[in-house]
Amino acid sequence: MSPTPEQEDNIRQKILGMKSAFSSYNIVRMREALRYMSGPKLSLFIKIPFLIHVNLPDIPGFVSQPPAAHGIYNFKDSGFYKEGLKLINKSGAPKGFTSGSAPKDPCVLGFYHIGSLGTFTQSAQSDFDYWVIIDKEKFDEKRYYNLKKKLDLIATHALEEYDQEVTFFTMDQAEIRRDCYAGFNKQETLTAPKLFLKEEFYRTFLMIAGKIPVWTILPPNIKKGTYSALVKSIWQIPSLTTLDQEFIDLGKLEYPEKKDILRGILWHICKSREDPVKALIKATMILSQGFGSHEHASLLCDEMKARFGDAGIDDYRTDPYKILFDRVIAYHETHAPESLSLIKNAIFFRLCQYPMVRPPESGSPKKQLLDRYIRAWNLTPSQIKKLITYPSWSEDEKMLLERTFVKRLSEMYRQVGQDSKAN
Image (cartoon, rainbow, N blue to C red; front, side):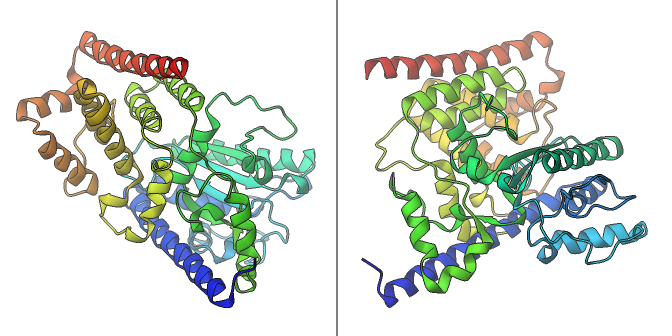
């Protein structure tokens, strides 16, 4: 049955309200990201989308061979375009450059940063990791090759000129909807758990340019099996059809099964060699999804979305990682109190830029959050001193702590495995 005009107007107001809330949230995240970047890396961060958008000699990322493989959808309306122009003009506008140099058929539909930028875990070592969303049907192998070459040239420029690692993950919009992360005309080789990869994207992504993921305007905790019908019904409302071109459908998220949780923890056991602190926190978040009724549970990204409208400058309550930290603490308090001190240590280190470990900047939201935890956990001055002086620990002490983190990861894996067998 079609909705009444009154129902249509109600839906329209809710959709526009969610769009506005996400926009405000993204602005807050962006300000936080820019605020804590050094001058050179700030310039690079602003330049990167501009370098993808244009393709001219003397600008990093130039690819001379046809067909054209550059441009981001609706980029000229982005603040990054205006700031990119300023940076380019400071060094002298390149030959042939005009404000109309953008392609008529931009190849990038959506450009997003994923990870710690704009959160309290941002540091000078934070990666620049981007999702680059394309429509593969508009690419042949040559155009895809040119896009990949352009992105590789930009990444090389970032490393050589700014000492910044930049990674671009180029993916097709239709395949992402199906949770397929294969390369162009290649078989998928990804071993990471797909459900949690998409959950982390939705929870941490920073909108840079292009189309907005439609997930942002849908209500949290959608019932299983209703996502596609809901999206379709939204764009059938006449007053919303003009909004359709502003959004991109990257697919649904449903509550994980035990097998998903098992794979997710195993993945982080493998990743623990690189960073046992991060691995333990993320694996605990995954494990926390396995407790409680599905009807009353909430994915972490949906908790994040429910708070879009509450975001404010210097307000840690809507930070993606603060929500993550609170989730893993609550899990340990209820289900694993014997490991509560260990997860608190991991969070302390994460807020202090492990493995370098240094106090957050005085007066920063990160410092405020850490101080809040210190008070709540009743840490003594001697305990704080011991943690903050981690860089001066002996190698034996450091190895013992790492082994303790990995041991806890193994315990979590066995726990889920036993639960799966019991059921």
